[in-house]
Image 1 (cartoon, rainbow, N blue to C red):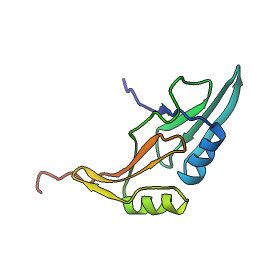
Image 2 (cartoon, helix red, strand yellow):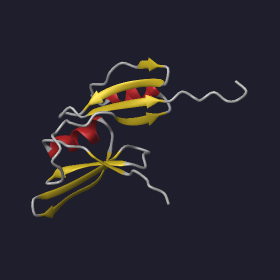
Image 3 (tube, rainbow, N blue to C red):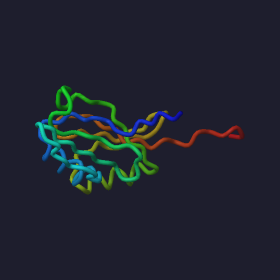
Image 4 (cartoon, rainbow, N blue to C red):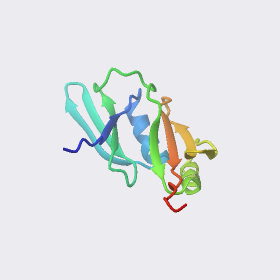
Length: 127
């Protein structure tokens, strides 16, 4: 039995502003935007190449907007990823190198925190 994490709720205060941010600045693909009635609006977006998506909307969660930290995207080239995000006008940090990988960081308009990581290749048995 596989248990795959494929959807993460991200609490936002303004759905339309969040859609604009995630599509225009972060480059996510808008998969769904549905008013399902009863005060519920469901929005789903997926980062390019990702099997997992994020969702937000109206009437979906009691989490405070901006309360999520540590969402992480993984890329093969951190410099190219930073250049792409910055080129879209995203306020993204400089590349930071750690023993476990290289990162850039950004937040959405509500303050939900994201990391973009380039994982260094793991050493093989022969070096």
